[in-house]
Length: 296
Image (tube, rainbow, N blue to C red; front, side, top):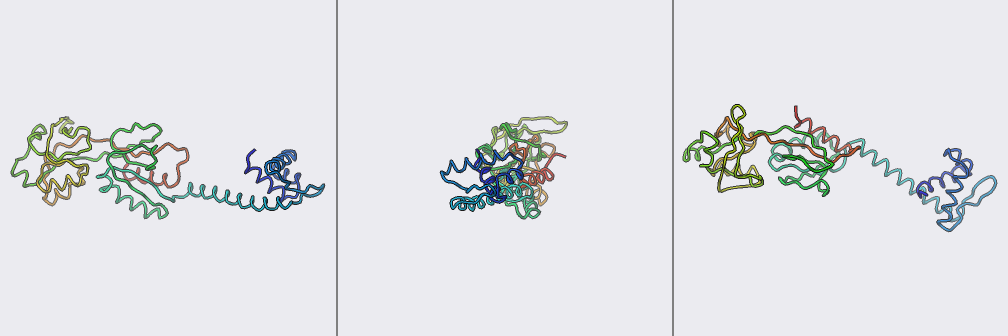
């Protein structure tokens, strides 16, 4: 028999003054009430109530048990109310995961807006390009590039970001400007170290023409900003999201290479575990990210 239900019934009997009154309030039989009280007494090995024909009086042990039951039930009620409150209003810590370049360039500025709108929500953001499984418990929500195959995970499509190529004016003056992706093999191309095919750039050109260009270079990194800085220092041709390179291009520090070509669109998803009742903090953050980065 459930101990918490027994505590609730015991308190009800004491407050109502009799088994019959408690049964009427709870909508159960007097026999059921007596059974629950008897189970408590047998489990504890002590009489809780002095039974008379008119009223139940607490024994010394019963009084102690009654006082403690009130505390336990109060804490239980507080725990449930706190959980319900957490479900109804965004509050608490959200652990989040995102790719490095996208995270610091796009996500962090938007998360600052989210936190200003939700002052009771804190965010712990991990920026890595290789994601672990949700089952590891390191995060609750993630932005993932590429396919999502983990079972029990919701994957909502986000906008793909456009990657372009650029190099410094000095590098291009020395080595010349490529006219076609197939010529990239003769240049130093700054590699993205975590790609499965770092020596190949799949480029989309006019009329959606696809060229799988062979590339090579002496410098690789897992961080887009490091590759950008290498390009600014005349190390070769960089392939990164347009928004990361556009300021340098506008200022003349970099020159776009093969402007009619860009890296094939890479799918990106907002992911989280399936939950029939996600917390308010997760619901609000999911809605916010989909509003900012979701497919139109």
